[in-house]
Image (cartoon, rainbow, N blue to C red; front, top):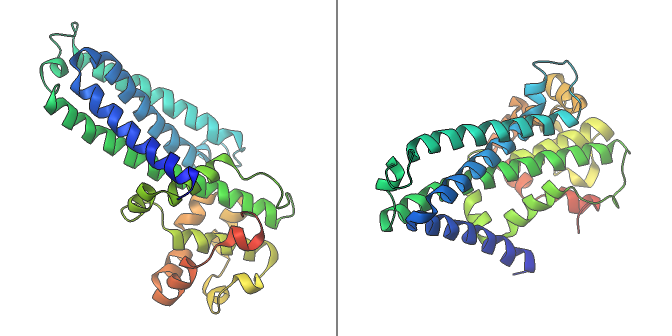
Length: 262
């Protein structure tokens, strides 16, 4: 177990403990609601970042990279103030008379708060892993296009994804992660390499080059940098449905093979 493994697990468990404590102590109701609002805002911000490209395309034909962050900021503040307003209404005009002040504190409150915290953290881990995947795909495209070299620092979101994946809690979470599929991610990475530099030799297990036809919508999505669309592409889903190809994809460590990660 390395330092980041301990740190990531400790951070996650610490966050759950904070939710339980805040739900137990009645006098901290206002701060508890603030923490929930920030957490919900953070989840919304991650969702906005991860879907920023497709949302921006509603307004412009060729979204700029900064638009992802703009969508994330708008989603964060929108969800934060909305949640804060709803919780403030439930709290009532007095800390002693609000709905949540009457119900849910002490042991019941700790259990309720732990459940809320668990749901928020599940969504946060899922969103952070997805954001890290998008960062990995963007970096890989830049590398394959000769826009960066292997010495360029790995993006922070990609590092966060690695920390999550290497932690014990992250590995458990991955088994129940409805959004992120490692085989699908590796198929997307190979498709990007193939689109940019052709079949990637030793990186490609036998059979995979022909099984990933980079054409049509998949090729357009790669060239536009719409990596969320790449991950959703039906051509790649067909590849990961094949048991043998899926097993081969799961064994790949593409960043390490290219020298992009130690």
